[in-house]
Image (cartoon, rainbow over all chains, first blue to last red; front, side, top):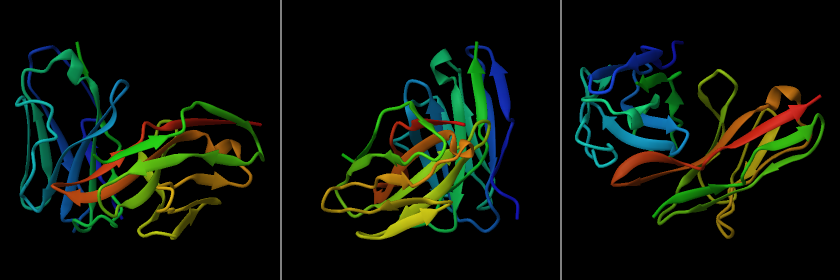
Length: 115
Length: 113
């Protein structure tokens, strides 16, 4: 079946512009996660959704970052007023349930470059 | 807090060599443990996992055993192949406030023919 998909695959933007990153999870997966992979910070957790709800937003790096999920499916990560330190690969993952033993399935990522 | 420490890379081996990548963790609960792999140009994918103490995860000739007494989850393979060249990430999963994977820093493995 179809895996997790993300769009765009690459995004180059100018400092100060807003960007939207999209994630389509595996159909039927209730849990959805966003991570960021950068050279300096490795793989870091940003936010997770159980259904359409994000119980804990403390992993988001600043108030310029926000995320939403609609219909228990598609999620959008928005970065406002982008900065050069936002350059990274943004990864989305989904899992069948919100359970520690469940495997998280990752998408291919969106590579964001802020000039 | 919760953290994962992996053996630093890069690691370079010859084909058919024995591989060990060390991974230790710190957790305030009872985590599930995972090894994820990222092949060149590809996304992260699960290699194996173990969800409780003394469990052994295995896949593609790789194995790792959940050792609670030493808080370790070392990855091993008896005979590596060139196609195993990738970056390997050890990770733990806990529900404590936020459900998330906590990753180690990754170990880049290169296998030479």
